[in-house]
Image (cartoon, rainbow, N blue to C red; front, side):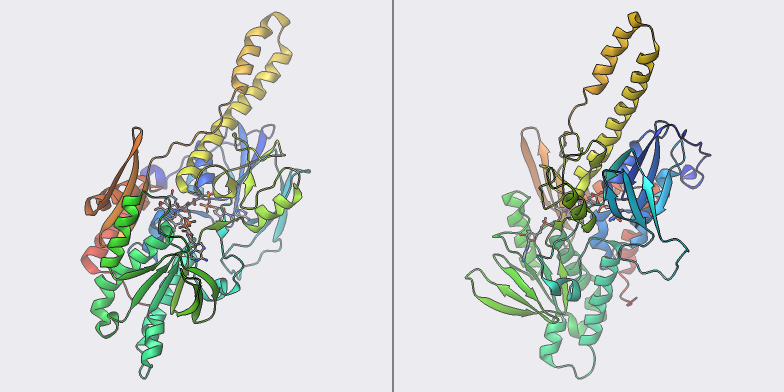
Length: 470
Ligand code: FAD
Ligand code: NAD
């Protein structure tokens, strides 16, 4: 903790070293930054978010189980602790020119509005290597009403918006003279998407209702309804059958209705248009709508794909080879949700890719140095170094090692699908929740985060969650 607060002095990487520009401060980029050797590269980070966000605990922030400040950590915490200084720019990359090897950055933040404006708000940065770790954005299938009337759950401001809207619905329902029909609508909380994000949000909302709102709004709480809408025949398609069953029965006990084989076709201000299993269309009034139907490529990624039509043919993200290098480029790499690989878009994959790529860069730098040495030594000594160089160039492709999947399902219960030998170990319940907690605590970014999350959980148990509307 002392080291955390007192980073030592840093030196400057010689200008002769190559420049790596890293886009993003999420799981992939952060893991890359932790591992990259700054003696070998000049490193520049560009991200509209000046912090890392521990997404697995974001659903807990929507109801105040955990405070947002407990799960974020400034990216400068990593960069300031490296040997050599890394430049960090809070900015959005708006364009990549793969021919000139230059990116354009704009000094504005995705999702944030700022009144502070400097004299310069756009600039360019040249790179030798570019690491694209910009993640993905929310999939809306072109339904305009989603953005207008719904809430996503991907970023800090999404969790804040959900919390504000939830309390708004409840206070509005308590307004004198509200009709029963309107109260019913306002207190209908609908989650679209039965992936892990939708399930964890519904579970947290349920806990908030029974553990806190019940005490403060006794006249309303029995009227609050949670509905989860999923297009496929079951929720959590990535988990095993037993765990899907367990989740569905736990949700039933918690009075959370699951509508499977139900596809949202349109989103209006106060209602959804849904197509049920029998193909008929009906409406579903809602007070709060949380939209969690997965990912699609960010505008920056789409723009880059459009510039490389011969080699970039995926729509979901950047096509990369087994070494995470962009197809059609020898200087751009992509990691995490921005890249299309055979793996799921998860934090586990992104962080392993970031770490792997930093080791690839290490080998590239060593190989380049060796090449320079070989040129300047006598012929008879070259053979040994040539062999070493060949070994350095034989870089193994990226291999993902799955550590298992965890998901919170409410009422202090979680599910775990863990690889064990050739098969899988599955478990669900209160003991699994203890495991879920310990796994997340140990994976949190810093000691500060660990300390804060543990104190948030203790505060929630002793004092309950705060119901004030921000
Ligand atoms: P991100 O972590 O999304 O980071 C992207 C970064 O790029 C951000 O810093 C962003 O600000 C920046 N950026 C965006 N646009 C630009 C731009 N134009 N220029 C520069 N920078 C830009 N996965 C798991 O494995 N386990 C879990 O328990 C889990 N829980 C999750 C819970 C929730 C609620 C969500 C939403 C996701 C969860 N995931 C989980 C998935 C996981 O969070 C993602 O797979 C992971 O964040 C992907 O990492 P990334 O680095 O690719 O992108
Ligand atoms: P997802 O892609 O995993 O799930 C989205 C769900 O929405 C799918 O089941 C899909 O069938 C459904 N859907 C799509 N369109 C629909 C429509 N029009 N109407 C109704 N349902 C519709 O997305 P996610 O849950 O946001 O997760 C994104 C990634 O993050 C995944 O890889 C996931 O594994 C990961 N994640 C992991 C955890 C965890 O491990 N605990 C938590 C959150 C997210």
